Amino acid sequence: MCRHPVLALSTLLLSVVGSTPADAGAQPRTGPTTVEAFADAFASVVRARDVDAWTELVTEDVVMMPPGGRVVEGRRAFHDLWSRSFEGRSGPNPLRVTLRDARVLGEVAVVRADYGPEEAGPVGQYVWLLERDARDVWRLAWWIFTRRSAR
Image (cartoon, rainbow, N blue to C red; front, top):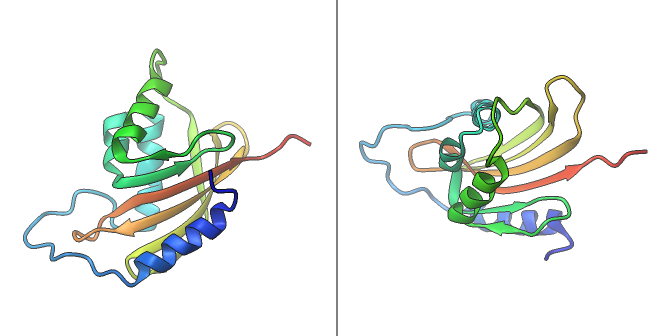
């Protein structure tokens, strides 16, 4: 496991900034077309525990780095992990996502956001690397998240 997620994220960012999206043709947009819309869609599908819709928000080769957990790579592994996590749970998941800042660099965006239950303050922070696809839709490529330590 990489002990320097910021270095890994920076390396990935440098490798994809110069890439050019494929021709979109006549395909319709099917997803969030702004960083803010992505954050709203992300929170909405997590609150609804809709793993299938959530999986549509990520790239095929998504990488997720949870705190203290193993790295999850690929859309299928992402889907399987969250399906198991939500299994047997009912009702909405009270998640709030608050954007801290976002840097859009062409077809890539680096986003920092706080997350936590709606009724409480943030319990941690996300760093997202989003990629804009050929239809101008933002998808999650890298997701690093931390939890705040109790002091």
